[in-house]
Structure formats: C-alpha cells, structure tokens
Amino acid sequence: MNEIKEQNWIHHVLYAIFGLGSVILLTYYLSNTLIHFTTPRQFPVNSFSQFPLTILIFPAELFSILFGLYFVFVLFSSKKTPAPRPLTERPKVAILLPVYNEPKEVIERTIKACKRIRWPEGMRMYLLDDSDKKESMEMIDSIAKKHGFTLAGKNNSAEHLLIRRVGRTGYKAGNINNAIKNFVTEEYFVILDSDQAPDPEFLEETMDHFSDAKVGFVQTPQYFINDDTPLERAERTGNSIFFHAQTVGKAKDGAMPFCGTNVVVRTSAFNKADGFSYYTATEDIDLGIRMNALGFIGAYVPKILVRGYSPRDFKAYSSQQYRWANGNLAILRESWYKIITGKNFSLRYQIHTFFTLGWWLIGIVSFTFMIVPIISLLTGWGTHHTWLPTPLIIFLYINIIFGISMIYLSTRKRLDDEPVRITDALLQYSLITNSMFIYLRAAFNALLKRYIGFVRTNKTREHSGILQVKWNLLFALVCFTLSIYALYHAAIAVDIQGLRTYLPVSLWLLFFSLVLGSSIIFVGDAGKKAQVSHHD
Image: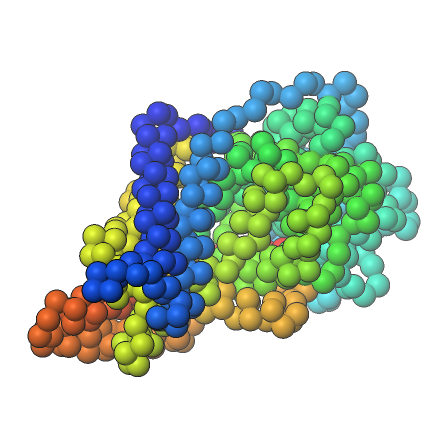
C-alpha cells in the first residue's frame, strides 16, 4: 500500500512565493491593461479600445493566472482529515466489473485481485458483460465458469452473477444502471474498470467513511503502472497532479469529483440521484454533482489501492482526452446555473467545481496564446503588451517556468517508491500543450451541444504514427517561420519601440514552435503490442 504523503514546509514556502508572485502579477497586469496612463499624454487609456486583440488574449491570460492562484489554494488546503469513525455495521459489498470485448488476461487479472480483497462480511461480484462479439462472449462464459459466476436469471441468489442485457443503451453507464436497478441488493457497491486491480485492503481503507451518513461515495486514486514511454510517463505525471495534489483539498470542501472507477458508492444515494445520465461522456462527474445537490458528499482516500493502465499510444490517449474534455464541458454548459444556485453548494464548492469542469478550456487558452501574437505580427494591430512596462513582459515568460516548476513541486515526494524528475514535468507540460487541438475540438462541439456519449479507450499498445500529431507539427512550422520573420524585423528596428514590438513575439513563437515540435516524442513505433485494453 502506498500512502500519498503531505509535503513539507519547504514546498509550502515555494508555493507561497508562487502565489504571491501571481497576485502581484495579476494586480500589476490588470492596472496596466484595463486603465493605462500613457507617458506622452498622461491620461487613462483603455487597452480594449486601443488594441482590439486584447479582447482575445486578456481572458486567456486572466484564466491562466486565476487557475494558478486556485492551484496554490488547493495545495495549501490539502491537509489530511482525521480518520473516520469505524463503521458499526459492516455489510456485504457488491463489486461491479463492467466489461466490453476485453482481453481475457485483463479481466482475469482484475477478478483474481477482487477475490483477494479482505472483507469478512463477504463480497458479491457482478460481471457486467456488454460484449457484442461472439468470441468475446464465449470467452466471458469460460471465465465466469472458472471463477464461479452464474448467469443472471438462472439463479440470482448465486455467489457471483454474470449479467447481460438486451441492447447497449447508455453503454457503460447504462450497463451499471441496469445492474443496480435489477440485480444488486447490497447497500454498497464498488465500480472497477476492467484493468483496475484492487489491493487486498481496498474495502478496509474505504468503508469506514460511510459511518458519516452524508458520504455518498468514497473515491480512491487512479494509478498507472505503465511508464515505458514518454507518453506514459507524461500521463502518469498528469494523473498525479490531480489525484496526489488536488483531490484532498477538493474533498475537504465537499467537492470531490466522482471519477467513475476505484470508487465505493452508497446504493441508496445512487438511486436517490436516479443513477447515471447518458447525455455526457463523463457521466460519473455529472452523477457526483447531482449527488452533491442532494446533500451527499464524496470522501477521498489518499492511498494507492488500485493499479491499472493508462492509454499506451497517442491515438488512444487522444480519444480518452477528447471524451473527458467534451464531457466535462458539456456538464459545465448544461449545469452552470444549477451549480451557482444550488442550495447545498457553498462558495468553495462552486469554485472547486468550476475549475474542475472549466480546466478543459485549456485548449482554447493555449491556442489563443499562439494565434494572437501571429495576428498581431501579420496585421500590425498590436495588443496591450505593446505598452506594458518591459519588466512585466519578462515576467510573463518567467511565468511559464513557474508553471512547469509547480508541476514538478506539487508531485515530488508524494510516494516513497516513485521519484518525480523535472523531465516528467516538462513532458507533462509538452503533452498538455500538444493536446491543444483535441481540447479545441471538444470545446467547440460542446458549445454546439455535440456531446459524445461513449468512447471505448483502447489500451492495447499499437503503432502511433506521425499523422497523429500532424496539426501540431504543421503549426510548429508556422510558429517557427513567423518567429524568424519577427526576429528579422527586430534586427532592423530603428527604435526601442520596434524592438519591443517584434523581439518578444519572436521569442514567444520560437518557444511554442519547440513545444509543438516536441509532440513527435509521443508517437512513433510503440514496439511489441502489450495485451492490455480498457473499457471506461
């Protein structure tokens, strides 16, 4: 068992420096953008009227600064809560394993791990098979026979049940809804994706939280055991930023997201919220918010209790990230008013939830940071950066270094057996930036109410060629070419104003051309296929 550790005072000092720097930057930045006193004329001028491109880039910069401050706030509030009171009645627990055309070894790995869970009161496993391939269904039948599952309908009081249904309405969400409505009789149930193998102490570490009647679900971290490639290492770092650095703080304020796997759920709370909805691909997050609206909260156990696999090639990663981005932004679009007006939602809850959902706008933010300087360079329209004091412009570049440093600092020394290197932070920053077009498409479709209801994330390692990142590489070439163009104009500038106009744009575009070009490290020959797949 690996406990996610709190960090020491040195980390907190560094977080405080970052937060203070962000506050100073925000104050100084706003004072020189909204109203600026020009030296020649000495009267206030508004950047939005003077430089129309400010309308585009200002919200993106403001979002980045505010998220940085929020991140510091979460890190400072991530003090672990006292251990819960022991659960007086320790009932039998259901283990739900939704599967869909999964490889045999993946399912058996999870079933064997579930059988090793220590819970004297007993467990009942439900194998929820939505497979639609004959060979997959036959394979599930053989697994069921081997591990003591009985097909539902023949003997529903059997030790373990294999459940199949007619049609696949709602996909994974519908599969679970069907099981809860028609077969599950236990007061609590666990959801595990097919590749998520729990440790023996999983229930011992989670069930006591239900001694508080307000707890509707208990979430544990997702943890990826594969880290053979730059993509996999970057994914694990990104996962750590959320589950190691943020979720303790979110849970303390009753805003723990329901993450869909590695979670124990109070059946009565699930039913009171009418189960999963089908309009969004992140039905788990949506369910958590609806449970919160009813007065239930989510608890969090900061210990690695389940081990699984991340997507192993860029195509599978892109599919997963698109689903998460589109799903969360769909919830934000449909539920923002309910979140603002919900009687059970505190201000802290609202802040946590809006940043949980709104973070997926990062694709728009990243694209804005790149496209606005290009428009400015080609049209001469300029932005508010043209008249900002030189020290502030330099600080905007330093802010990127701060961001990468925060990725590193917030994830290091969290687990004893998992060293975090600065290269992992660089990989994560690169991966997020190179996911820009994925997030852009997801946000655009969410805006138009084009919600994706289901995507199967394949975790079989496959070849992922350069075409997977073609738009990143093409945009990198554009940024590099225009960087050289801006550098040329900076070199021939006859005054300091010309140098200030062109040199920052040149350096900025050069930086992003390098980041976008680095997308090539996430693709290529992934080597021999590993027989790992995933249904989520």
